[in-house]
Length: 178
Image (tube, rainbow, N blue to C red; front, side, top):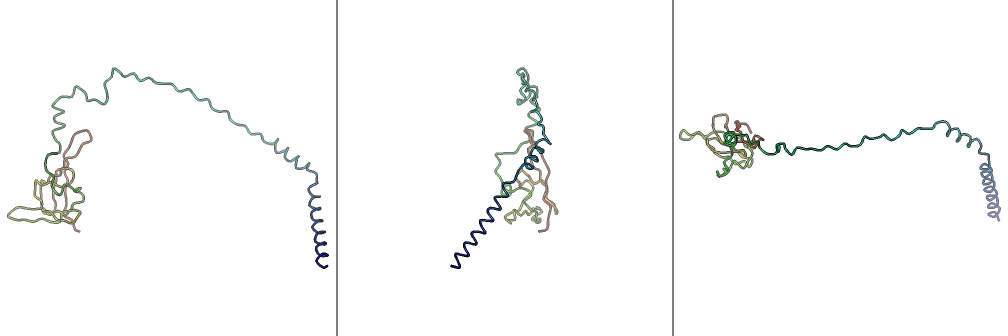
């Protein structure tokens, strides 16, 4: 019996709260409508018109009677062509062991003199020491050894000049500490 009395009171309280909330919704909305109307009239933005683009003008390239830029000039003399191609790597020469490594990965570790012949000692990246003489090749640019002294090994390399020919370039390995 206590529960039914308690539940009926709870029901009455809930009913009163619901009615009070519903009565709040029944108010006049004139002030809200007036605010919305004032906001709508305050600012009216403008949109810029889409810009007009100029039509693309076509270009006709009429160069049928001009020289092809990808062909050599016929006026180039035979001597110039021969001089340009006179220096080039010897592709038929058998490669030596040190030519499989770039020159900057090789290290000069000393010299050895035997029967008045000066040998250069060069260590490759695999830590193998090779004996070299002037005339031997090393590096990947046809680097031929031209001089061996106490402090360095001098090379003459043949490298591409970027214009279809080749040039000679000096290089060296200096005796270094490891």
